[in-house]
Length: 339
Ligand code: SAM
Ligand code: SF4
Image (cartoon, rainbow, N blue to C red):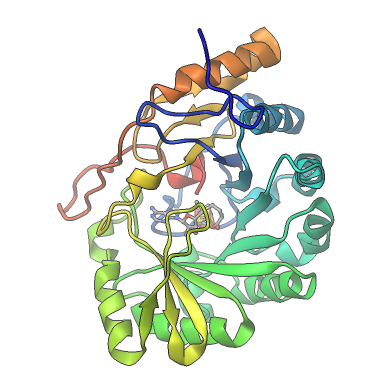
């Protein structure tokens, strides 16, 4: 079969002509918190003997980079609770030094960031996304079920001190943190962090009905626009966020709107789970098993499977959250596929 070659690589192009340049790797589905919109309190996690070794993760990252992936995000679950993740970042990060990778980033809940930030910088990480749904200790504890916000704030401060750019991810939750959106924006502006708001998505069963907490971000944008001058920006960072400049605060805000404004047309990313399943979309079940391919056929089998996977990428997700007690769009939690 003849294949297109661009700039010396055989790019990964899906059936709709979208080039895949962004890989998210979930290094573990486990977490030290239990955010109510993400997980049930009594979660069952994948058996440890099914999880990819760090060497296998590095080999899979190599295979994607060889096919033109330019950005990798390590995520989870909580990536920084797995031993050896800063070292894994160092192994993947060597591709930045030799020009084969533009960026290696990480999404974390921040609880272990104070301890790991310097090692992440040494590994070549320059930006981290930290989830922070509230700066109020009681609320933070409620949302995460037992988290300590001071630990996260310490982690964020350590990341900044180590030279990492920090983007705060805040899931907008009706009646839980909507009154904190403006204070969070002001705090981020003062601290020099970016802020991205996210709509809660119907992924996996949790202990409550997400409809009760769903806050459409078009409403939030309108409320902010009545308080500030919002100028839409063309910046895209390879992710789904749409950015607005907040003129009065000299900062910007990103909105991730999987429900109110579909962004799939520009999708450039795929995700692998900690067990080596490659999912083509957060909201669909199409997947291939990279772990078996790697273990049984080595790098060649892995490479061939990437081509097969491209044909499986769907045009778009179809999330809905407006039907009370409706089943989730997919049974996998975001902590499995990797946020
Ligand atoms: N544990 C890390 C963290 O919290 O940043 C990384 C994994 S977490 C799954 C990645 C992001 O997904 C977080 O910003 C989290 O708030 C978000 N998230 C989790 N479940 C979600 C859901 N059902 N809808 C929208 N965002 C969700
Ligand atoms: Fe853990 Fe992140 Fe999910 Fe919260 S959002 S439970 S920190 S994986």
